Structure formats: structure tokens, C-alpha cells
Length: 137
Image 1 (tube, helix red, strand yellow):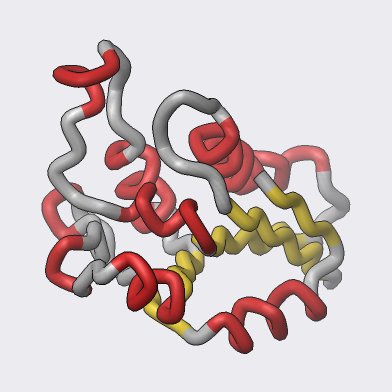
Image 2 (cartoon, helix red, strand yellow; image 1 turned 180 degrees about the vertical axis):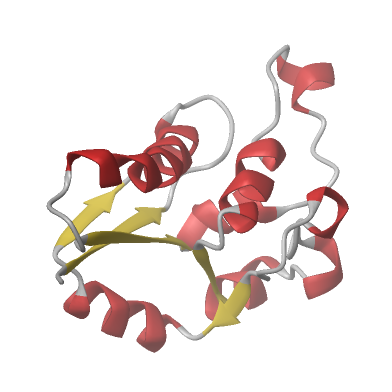
């Protein structure tokens, strides 16, 4: 049984570009590829938010009000609902002065059991070195 590890690194702001939304969409959809795999093979997707990308993790986004589009919060919650590993760069949160209570860390309200992790960049780097496929967005 083989596991293909995927890592999506979101480093773009949540608005004015589709990069972060696409990273989350691809990470979520990767969970459905099992029907194309050999018996016993698995896909394990992780998403990491670094640089400006940590802004994607803010709760109570008002994208509809300001930009006329849905917010990325739904995608974040769906990734946690699927038990996907979500990593948020600790150093970048500090750089922007963002506290944990301002972040969407769980999807408890829709039945999710996994929580996002605030980790040092070194842990994200280790994850990058260990995956089979890496995508920067």
C-alpha cells in the first residue's frame, strides 16, 4: 500500500487572485482521487499557509460585502472537515500581529474534529521535503 503525499503552499492573499482558493480546492478534491488509485493506495494532502497566505485563515471575512465573492472560510472549514492537515506559519502570524483567536482554527460547527496547527516555518519546510508532490500558490 502506497501513500502519495501532496503539499499545497498558499502564499497569496485571499482576494484579488484565485491562487489560494485554487490551492484549497485542489487539496480538497485530491481526497476524491482514490477511485483512480490501485487498491490500498492513498492520497494524503496537506495545506500550509505562509507569507501573505496566512490572511486566508482569518475568521469573519467579509468578502461578499467588499468584493462580491464568497469568502474562503467555507473552503477552510471543508478542508478541516475532511481531516486534512492545515499548517499556519507562526513567524508570519507574528509579522502581521495576528493572534490565534483571530484565526479559523476548527470546523466544530459542521462536525469537524481536526484543528489547524500554528507551526514554525521549519516544520513547514520539513513537510515540503517529505512530500511526493508540491504546489506553490
